[in-house]
Image (cartoon, rainbow, N blue to C red; front, side):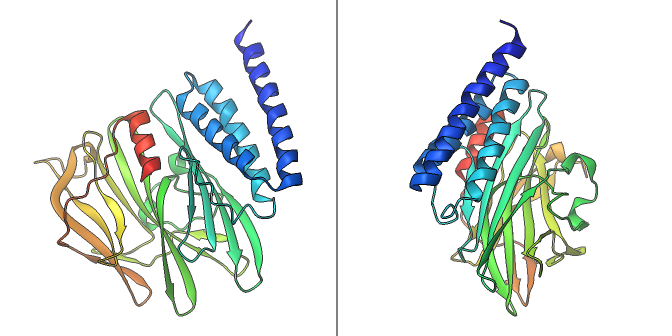
Amino acid sequence: MNRYVSHLIIFLCISKLSLNVSLLCQSSSDFYFFESRLQTLGDQILNSKNDSTSSIYNNLLIDDIEELILINGSFEFPFKNVNNIKILTSPDKNLKIYNWVLPKNNGEFFYFCYLHFFDKKSKSYTHHKLIDNSFENENFEYQQYTNNLWFGALYSEIVYTNFQGKDFYTLLGWDGNNNFTNKKIIETLIFDEELKPILGVPIIKMKKGNQNRVILEYSENTSINLKFNKELDYIVFDHLEPVENSQDIYEFYFPSLSYDGLTFKNGKWRLVENIPVYNDKMMDGKRLKKIQQGLQE
């Protein structure tokens, strides 16, 4: 049996299962069936031995997510038993994110994300697919994007803030980047009057001025911390320093054993250096291991 026929059989079998599960869910409102599907497909994506097979499972997952979002009640269902894709709900309970990574055998990573948003004013739901265009853009820290032009990442946390009645969602994420460096991402998100997402709001005040997002790039051979510390009310991250004579060569950037942070004041995230916090590392690991760790953050 050749590879094409084998892949076709896999596709048809799983597609039939997907249809049966979908019909059952819509008739019984039993989201546990979809929960099992998401877990299985996410596992198959991460553990497939070749890119063509993982792409087949990835397309099936996309179909399931797009179908699931349209079912009444999906926004409220917790999906507690899915641990190989990220399903996050914002602290204000108005934003839900479905997010996962498709690794390639050449070391590249492609990211997928759906935003499911509840608008308090209109009492209505909207959803948007984010399109990963990380490989086609430059000057990321100073760009504002739409859902069709997204700096792809695997998000671990949503930080909610409000200023003068405007809701801000700050997403903390990870990007495997390449075989030499990893990245941690601090992404800002709002929804405009038409309920369309705007990614990269220029409200992050760093040393060089306002930025749309923060990108922390560092050596593949180390790990760094990025999380929201509720006790301090700060987004906390490792301060990075290059080894001697390696300025701007990020495969030689490592944590300096000190921490910086961002605090939200008057509608802006503001940099504060040398925050006194205890060491609480969250390791990135290598390849599949680091993806799995990113999913657990």
